[in-house]
Structure formats: structure tokens, C-alpha cells
Length: 164
Image (cartoon, rainbow, N blue to C red; front, side):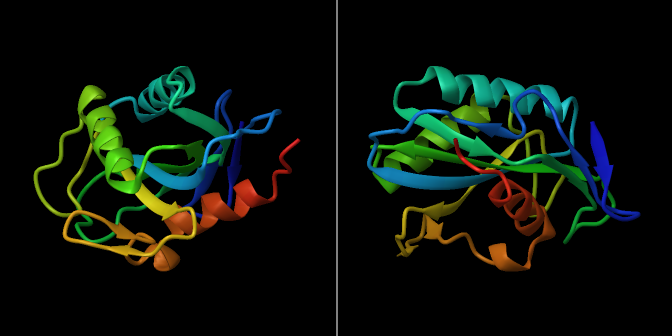
């Protein structure tokens, strides 16, 4: 199912996006990640990511947003992006979580040649619990998240969903 928001923005609803977990997690940290891509079958790649996260006992997926098809920013001469949000819980510390997300990006064929380039998969840590982190490897909350439709719109639609 899809919902056209305007000429440039369309929401997609699939079997895993949106998703709501029906039981509580006892894991320590609530983490919000943004996912995006515009090369190849991005929906299929997002489903694989969802299934990897769901099968990994270090993570409990709490909920996901619908997927948003939106125009690129920065480098404009490329295909539109598909973006979404996944909220999960983990006991991993922020840097260990980052390493795990980078491994998943690579496992799912991440390719990106320059800043804002077309990509197969990008996983960004938007929020990590209520932590503020500013290191060379990790900045949380994610830099400029509040100015990106690719984050704001999926978050808005995800937060309309009630966790059961």
C-alpha cells in the first residue's frame, strides 16, 4: 500500500514497515536508527536488515515506520531514496552498537563512493537512549536529523502508531 504525501514524497506500507512489537523488552538502551538507500532493490534489502535484527538476540525491534520515498539532497543527480526508521532496544554500548550496524551495512552490500552519493544501504544512529555523544567516530543525536524529511516524516508516522 502507498500514500502519496505530495509530488515528491510517498509513504510505502509493507509487511515489516510499519511494525509494532507486542511484548516489552528488558534491554537497557532504546535506540532509533534511520535507514536509507537508492541503489537496487532497497525494499528487499530493508526486509533482510529487519530479519537480521529480529533474529539477533542482542536486539529487540520495538517498532518501525512506514518507508518514505523522497528526493536526494546534497548530490542531486541520483535516484530518489527510500528511507525508514527502526526503534530497537539493546544492551550494547554506543560504539559496539555502531560497529554492529557497520557490519550489517557491509553484509548487505553497502557501497558509497563519496558524501551524499547513491548507496545500497545507509544506517544512521539518530538517537541512542537520551545520550549526547560527540566523538570522531560517532555523533548522537545524528547531525542535522531535525532538518531531514527522510527522518522527520517517518518518525512522525511511526509515533502515530501505538505500541501494544
